[in-house]
Amino acid sequence: MAFRHPAAFLLGMEGLALHRAFAGEFDAAFVADRLAEVRRILAADARGELGTSDHVGETDTVAGYRVWSRSYDEPGNPLIDVEEPLVRAILAGLPAGRALDAACGTGRHAAHLAATGHTVVGVDSSPEMLAYARRNAPGATFLHGDLRALPLPDASVDVVTCALALTHLPALEPVFAEFARVLRPGGHLVTSDIHWQSLYLGGIASTVDDDGVEARLPASRFRPSAYVTAAVGAGFAVRACHEPLWPPSDTGGGPFLRSWAAEAVDAAYGNTPAAIIWHFRRC
Image 1 (tube, rainbow, N blue to C red):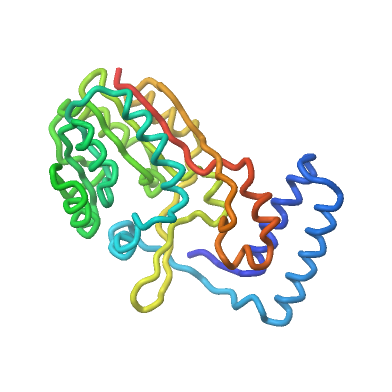
Image 2: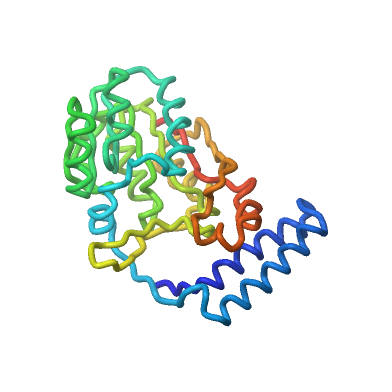
C-alpha cells in the first residue's frame, strides 16, 4: 500500500527540477522561482488547499484492466503516443508470418499485425480486454492465458509482441523463457514498457472503480540490465533498444501538478525516457 501526500508529490517535482538546475541545466532565476514556488506550496498545504493525504491500495492486473479496458485506447494516452510508432517501425522490417501478441490488451498491435499480413493470435489474462481485442482485430484469434504459461505449442510463431505489460510482473526470467519456447529459431521478439525512471514521475498505472476507490497496478522497476539478463539467459540476442523521451507537452504531469508547478514538471519530464522498447532475436 502506497502513501500519497499531495504536497510531497509537488515538492518531489520541485526537487527533481532543482537537481536539474544543480547539474547545470537551468540558471539562477529558475532556482529562485522554484524556491518561491516551494514556499507557496508549503503555505497552501498549511491552509489545507492541496487536499488530504491518503493510502492507495493495490489491485491485480485482471481486476485493474477490467476497469481500464473502458478507456485504455482512447486518444490522449501519452505513453502509447510515444511507444506505438517505434514498435510499428520495428515490425515493418520483419517478414509476415505467424505472430503472437502477448498481453494483447485491446488488440491494437494485433490489429496492426493482421493488417500487415501476419496470421495473429493474441493472449491476455483479462476477459474484458479480450472482448475489446476481438472487436478491434476480428481477423485474429484470441485466447485467455498468462504470460508465464502461454497457451501455444513450442516453436509455433515467428514474431512475438508484448506491449506495456512486463512491468506488472515480479520477475522477467519466466516470461522470457516462455517467449523463447513459443518462438521458432530466428524469430523476433518486440517488447515495450514504461521506463522505470518515469514510474517515479507518477507513471504507475492506477484505476478508479465504480465506487470511486483508486488502486494501483503492480509496477516493477526493471532496469535495462534486467531485460538483457533475462533475454540472453533465455537464448535471445539484442537487436535494438530504444528509450524515447517524453515530448514537450502543455498537459504533461496532469492538471493537479501543472496548476501548482508547471515549470518544475516540464523540467522534471525534460530529457526523461518515457518508454523502453526492445527488439530481440531468438538464437
